[in-house]
Length: 377
Image 1: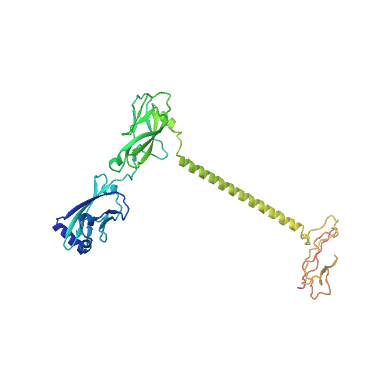
Image 2 (image 1 turned 120 degrees about the vertical axis):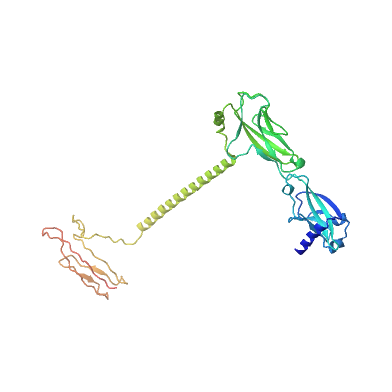
C-alpha cells in the first residue's frame, strides 16, 4: 500500500514520459499470450527492468496486461472482450504505464483491441414467440411494391463485422414477396390475386460481413386477407410447435406402457393365486389322513336308517403311545360305561351320567350322551 501511494504521488508530480509505444492485438486472446517485447521496443536492458522493479500501472483495479521482468515482454493477464470493454465505442484501446524506480521513469503503452466476429446477429423484429402465431396482414387489393413488414436486426460487433444483409431463404410463394438485401424490407413483387393462399410463411436469413460469417434466422407469417376474422379462421389450425408435439407423444406412449404393465402384472398375480389355491385343495383331497366326521349336538337320525339309532357326543384322547392304549365306549343303555384297556397306566373317571332330553313317553327317539371324559396323559 505504501508503494502504491508513493507511486501515485510520483505520477502526479512527475508527468514526464520518457517514451511511448503501442501495440495492436485481436480480442479474445488466450491468457498468457504474447503482446510484445517491451524491453526491446523501449530500448531497455533486462537488468534495468529487474533492478528498477519494473511494473504495470493502469490506474484501474482491473489489469488486462502483465509484465514479465525475466523476459522483458508483455503478456495477456486476462481475456479481453472488446464489446464488454468498450461497447459501441471505436476505436477500443487499453492504456497503462510501465514504471521503474531508482531513478523514477515512466513509459506509456497503448494497446489497440481489434474486433473479432464473435457475435451473431440478433433479430429484434418480428419477435419470435414459442407457440403463438403472429402474422402480418396484406390486403388482396395490395399493389406491386406493397410494404408488408421490415426485419430489424443488430450486431454488437464493430466495423464490417456488424454489416448485415438479408436474404429470403424459403417462402410459400416466392413469386409474391421479396426481401431487401440491405434494409430487410419485405415487399410484394406482383399484384395479389384471389387465388393466393391466405397463409404465407417466409423464412429470412440475416448474415453479417465477418470472416467467417455468422447468421440468424427469422420466420415471418403473412396473412393475405381483407378482414381480421378471416385471418383468425385461417390461422387457428396452424400446427403447434414440433418439440411440444414430440414431448406430448412421448408422454402418452410412456403412460400407455405403464398402464399396460400394471394390468398384466395384476393379471399374472391373480392367476397365480388361483392356481396355488387349487393345487392346495387337490393336495388335501388326495391326502391319506383319516377324516373324522363331526356331528352337531342334539342331532338324531329321524329316519332310523343309520347304524346308530341314537347320537352320541364323545371325545377321543390318546396317550403318547397310542398303539398300547385305547379309549372304548360302551353300548347305549340306562348307563354308559367308558372302558379302558387294562394295559394303560392311567385312570379314567366318569363325570356325568346320561340324561334324557325327551319328555314324551311315546317318542321313538331317546338321546343319551357322555358329556366329558379324560384320558391319561
